[in-house]
Figure 1 (cartoon, rainbow, N blue to C red):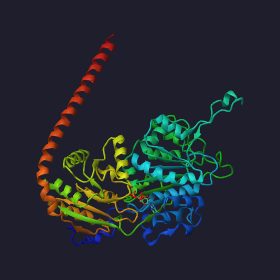
Figure 2 (cartoon, helix red, strand yellow):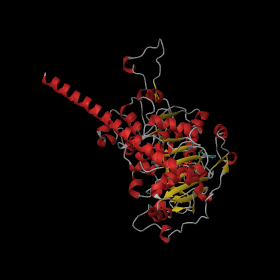
Figure 3 (cartoon, rainbow, N blue to C red):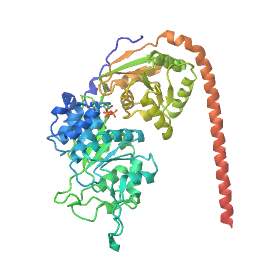
Figure 4 (cartoon, rainbow, N blue to C red):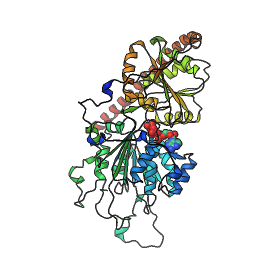
Length: 529
Ligand SMILES: Nc1ncnc2c1ncn2[C@@H]1O[C@H](COP(=O)(O)OP(=O)(O)OP(=O)(O)O)[C@@H](O)[C@H]1O
């Protein structure tokens, strides 16, 4: 095979030091380096609830990874949840369980059901994945987990999140108390920001009043996008307001808060009699955590503690092998097909730079007859996307072509290769893309297809990451040569398909505009009458 000796990309001196122009928050200068820790067997983990140990063992987890151990020590261990945690740890290092386990253990002693933990993620598929992790451990200690992502209708979602207690037959209810008390049906909620805001604004009985834990996963991505002000809203609604029962929030709340009435109350709460209400603990995590003070300040962190791995901000998995594949622009698809063939039927993800090129590339690849693997695109339509993802997980599809919608957090067992068909524009994107393989200590390869003019920029980008070892990979010519003929006919078929699809789009577009025009005429007539 054409893999040549690798070279470590030279790290320029200035990469070790923070450029003076970017101030780093003081607490970020004294991090805990997680890489100094070793895995710890569950049997040696202090305070672990035996029911959770059993649940973890069922998941085939017998020890905690370093980042999980570090978070455990700062939460259930001596740290005792006293500080908010900012975790910067490589892709596939186990960040999900790092927060899920201590939260579930901490809530295992609760005796009243109400929403205590909220985990926010940027995408539907990611939220589903994280919910599955909670669902694998939380029921063992009697906790229930909900999902708010817009997967089902809002009515279905509400019925799963909110309990309406049944009025018992024969009991007389005073007029004044006839309205049954709505309460949460879940202890832990995993949500995307949009659906979370829908519930905050419109769902009766949905309250963040009792929230104890807030997790912002993929923090840098979530902070980049405001999503209807979800973060300030959540923070305001959970703020401990010492001085009044008349919340400060009323002074500033925009109408976006709608009917929402549940402001965290100071003092004593139902179900917490005799206990002062706990502070909202925050955990924020990413493989590429932002260090920008203005962004981090939005989180209003309490005495934050920074947990990181290694010296540099970006770190590639140690078990990853990276390769560059040099190719001529006009033969790039050919190189891709030949590369895929040389990889056999290993699960691979091919990343492109846009929705359109994902669609075109996937269509083109499917015109190469007799490829010994199935290729599908990770579509823009959620319904199709979920189906494709499931088939990919089950191994019914071996090659997934995707935009960067698949870059963050997605954990699909057995992905052996990541192929950068289009070069990522930023090191952050590269880190998340390649992180879909080489997860949890497994080996994995990344291949970046580069045109001549991209080579310099690629290596410059790679210097920003630790573990940036990279080799050249020459696609065997005996794979390329026989493909030329079929490539020409595949290109022709693609051209026809693209033309057909655009004429279909035009037809649909003009049908819509005719309908809209018809409606306009109709409503003009009605308003005349
Ligand atoms: N202690 C453990 N023992 C064995 N496997 C584990 C352990 N913890 C997590 N895993 C597995 O490791 C994989 C990666 O975990 P996870 O998805 O939490 O990584 P991550 O750090 O969040 O990655 P990313 O930054 O890409 O989101 C998952 O398949 C998970 O089941």
